[in-house]
Image 1 (spheres, protein in one colour):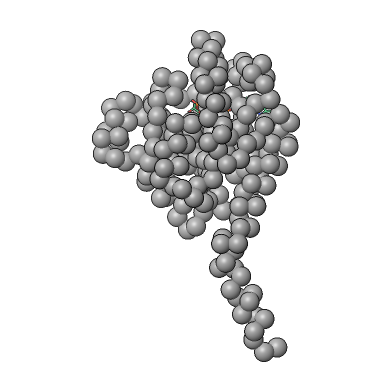
Image 2 (image 1 turned 180 degrees about the vertical axis):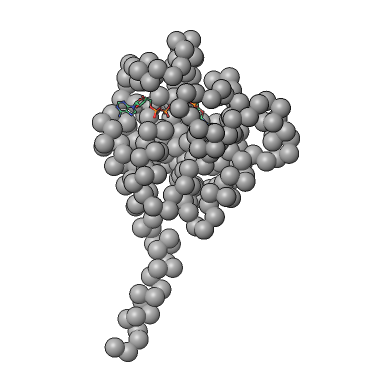
Length: 202
Ligand code: ADP
Ligand code: 5GP
């Protein structure tokens, strides 16, 4: 399964995704390519693949991206190779991407699960971005202006998480994974041997 998480910058996507990756088995994070400068504490190949514009442009030209978008003035994209690699062996994959990218993935992967994260209010979003302390004030203003537009996309998603109390939001994200894994068509393979055991002699 492909799980796509979107929402305005600072709403808590990375925090929620990190928790889901540690709490659940059989799920991997799709590492995006970006032209954004690396932040302190970020690791190449774990948080992002940091590339320059030339490299990103060649990935677009060679159709190596499953989706891409310009977000807050930088290029971000998910490579097709990354998706294939992370999904190998039947592992679920989580993408943390913006609403433009989510729309592109929806067109290609109709069965994907799309989750939108909302902060409890605009004021709280601003406070989180300031407190995170990773972006300059003008970048924060740009991200907040963008947030006003991005949140309008929420009706295009299957699930909404309101990230107010962190623990509740973490539980909700886990619950989405767990219930999707319990769907009849996804359980079919495991059901067959159980059914067989009921028809075999004791
Ligand atoms: P995003 O990935 O959506 O940009 P982050 O996960 O980086 O957002 O979260 C932005 C900031 O808000 C971080 O400093 C994070 O620790 C904090 N944060 C996340 N969720 C909550 C929450 N429920 N309550 C308070 N602070 C939160
Ligand atoms: P940040 O710079 O804070 O890491 O991310 C900024 C925004 O870019 C976030 O909304 C994040 O979800 C989005 N983003 C990260 N990777 C990708 C990607 O591969 N594709 C798209 N479309 N957006 C991405």
